[in-house]
Image (cartoon, rainbow, N blue to C red):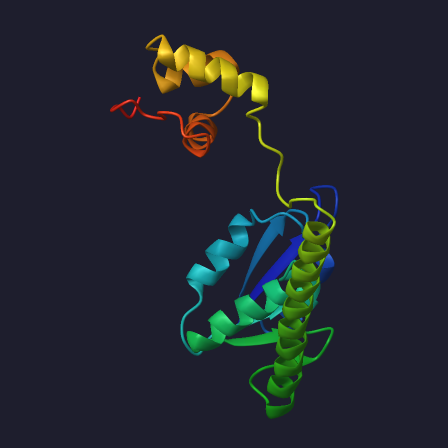
Length: 191
């Protein structure tokens, strides 16, 4: 069995997790010092790479492994596809048992429902905003003044890169705005 522990800061002590994992039979414990909201967890990546079929990954609590139910579900499903079991000591989830597998599948179903509800609410919110005349998304950086200046600079023979740098916008934003206004966005060149 391999263990994974996580604490949010270097000031926190992972000893409680290490002791529990070792007592449960973990022969090696990987430890990250990172917030659960942080995607960068190098020791988790190393741990997942270390695991082999028929291994078991153990955690002290499920919130130590996943940042959300959806994240946890993705990780444990990936482990299952690789032939690796999952065990959470505190919640008594153990995919090596029928009951533990059932509990995990209930979690997975709840996570899938949560993703669908979020998606439906997002679509409904965007539709309501459109009905009120508001467009979703980030406002364009290409204001009418910038667009007029871009057309003038392009007519003077400046490259797209030069124009974008002068206006303080990205090249792709410039190209998109020029194309939408029917202006020559490339002038036969990709610069």
